[in-house]
Length: 206
Image (cartoon, rainbow, N blue to C red; front, side, top):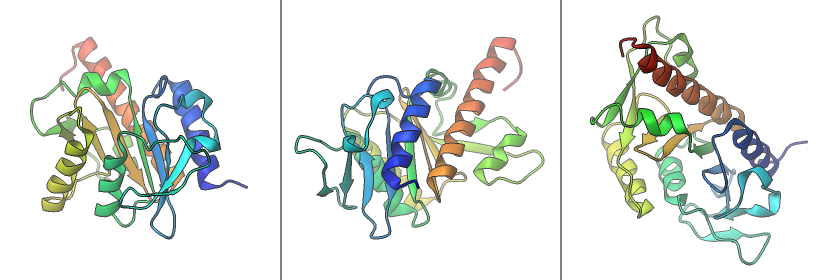
């Protein structure tokens, strides 16, 4: 029987094996029925993550439960808080760092990254034969709450086309109605990024 905590540990190990969560990079969370959420603690190696490396936070960031006394919430908790506050349907929020995500974030200076019209885009809920789709792109800040506030401000004014966003030279964040859906969307995003990088190498048009 799986639990939210075991789902997060399993996902972290898998993403580490894929090369998307090297070292302590990235963070994952799952929301519970009471609106609190389990999230990976700061500074924990994702390839060796255990259930004791997770904290349960209230939506305002207050620690509700901590298996160990010295755990600190991920530095990027504000991104998860923004997603859960904006999208009631979001039950899982995954943020990973990959080489391809960093590369494609520099393909445009615009606030959105146009995505190629691939059939796999349907995994983001876009069911069109030749989808015209773009991923929101945000500037990176060392002060991560600035990123969280930028997400809140933009998405409150104009909801995104797809349940994903990219932070320049940082990584991708997706959300879903379940841990499984969020994992699938991370895989989809990374496939699209890899395709875009390979396309440029082959000289194909964007």
